[in-house]
Amino acid sequence: MAIGAATSTVKSSGTAVAMTNEACSVVTAGSVYQITSATRRVVDPFQAVTVRDNGTLIAANLYRLDYTQGRVTFSGYTATGPVTITGAYLPLQAILEVKSYTISAKTNSLDSSTFDGVGWAQRISGLNSVTGSISFLSLLTADLDSAAVGTQSLSEYLANGTPKLVEIRFGSSTSYFRGWVLLSDIEEKADVNGVVEGTANFESAPQMGVAAVSFT
Amino acid sequence: MALAGHPVAVFAKATNATAVSSDEVDGINSVTYSPKVNMLDASTFKDTTGFALKLACLKDGSVSLAGDYTPSDAPQMLIMTSWTNGVPVWITMHFNPTGAAGTKGFQVQCKVESFEIKGDVASKVEFSASLNFDGAPVAV
Image (tube, rainbow over all chains, first blue to last red; front, side, top):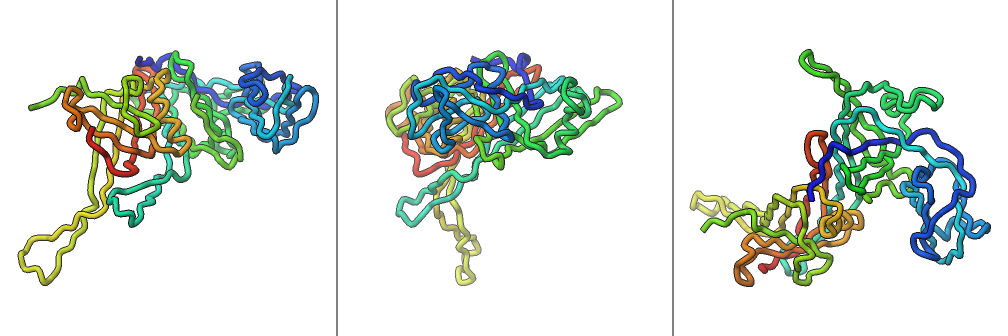
């Protein structure tokens, strides 16, 4: 069923807020747990994170944390619960007056053809990357979070070069994209017959060392 | 005889088993199946025909799909997760769905090279994907 785009939302991560022993809910008993509070599920990868099971600190090599979803998956360890996470979460703030978006996921399609006598090309998938763009009617200097120290604007994001999490929710569906991205370029343009429009292009930031993107 | 486009069916499956109705990709309204061959020029000075001599070498191809983004549709989501995981996906295209076996269309193992989701405030959320052949297609 087709989805209208008009109710889509586009957000970026804001200023980190500390959380201590944040409660998690069971996704798969014993192995997968997720932060219960939906507004605290984007975990700040620049802050130290610890995971506890029933109060016991769990070694980092026994789990993988999906920072975009606040989801911990244990490996080689069976949790009894309750599971808690200590660190910091990133609240999501709306990017103002967005009117369109594009997300493009690509992989290096590597040719692995050999003298196998088949005569058809064969392939393996190489490095993945995601690029995207948004266009909007707000100014590049618009403060996305007036409560935070300093101006949290797209032009500041470009200037400081720090990866930000971008979330795009597709229309009225429950499906969304979240990814750690770097702004590659921004633009503001005006025409005498039109409105002032801005665009921002971004690229996934796998240097985060965490799951860079997720499509849910 | 010309075939109408609207009965065309496109299926995505994680194995090469015969596609069934639950494998049909929802939301798609455009499909392009493009096999090709790497055509090498083998012309020589000694050949006096005056025509270029061509040699058909490695065969290859691509499939492109486009339509409405449909996150509730498992086959469309399979295309996205196949990109994420770098695993093959088998695409079956029935350009002639009422035809006899072997004339309906093609099935081919693919690797997802890219997909795109885009939305405009006055439009629908749209989806497109580009896939490369990962072996020989078969007529179905």
